[in-house]
Image 1 (spheres, helix red, strand yellow):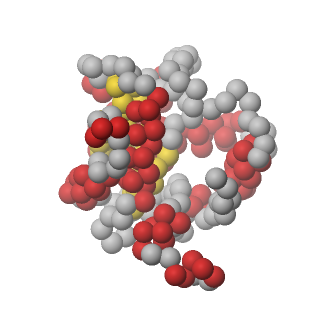
Image 2 (cartoon, one colour):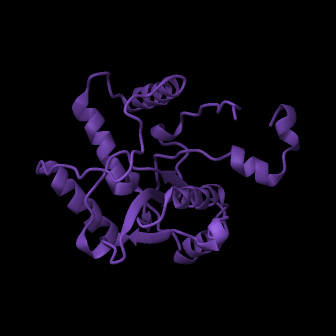
Image 3 (cartoon, one colour):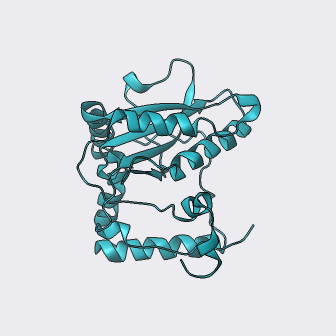
Length: 221
């Protein structure tokens, strides 16, 4: 690293080195590696140690059934359920809109998706429901009876998970859903949880085209 970054502590380097990955190798992830990182991430701060998160770890046939259920509903024209909360604003103000467009256009350029190619855009977007091909998917939920403070706590848990170092070569790649989806009955909670985010666990491929784009993050409060 050049400049003051070269004097950063390992923790600061881990934070600065976080990136979104959208290309994965087809390699199994050891269960103990997942458990170790989730256990460490669970030490994230929360209101009076309430830990308002519940993580569903999906692999193999279970993950495949979830993807198949969602994709069948989308292909059949099933209306998407209304979201329980507004993850996105009705309209994006600047400078946030410009940042999103910069990332989106750069990604689509790498993928060869032209402006106005709705079928190509939808096909790429549908990959989110397969956890972008990652061998492990995680569904993070919280009890809907809790307030917005619980969502902040869950966010800190996800942040700890996203930057946490796994075994050599392993790293979590967090992604949040942009649309609601229907959960199979087997994954529906009996004590009223709502889905807050999804994440993918992978052996990252640095050569995958969707993983090549990097953007600086403004140092604004």
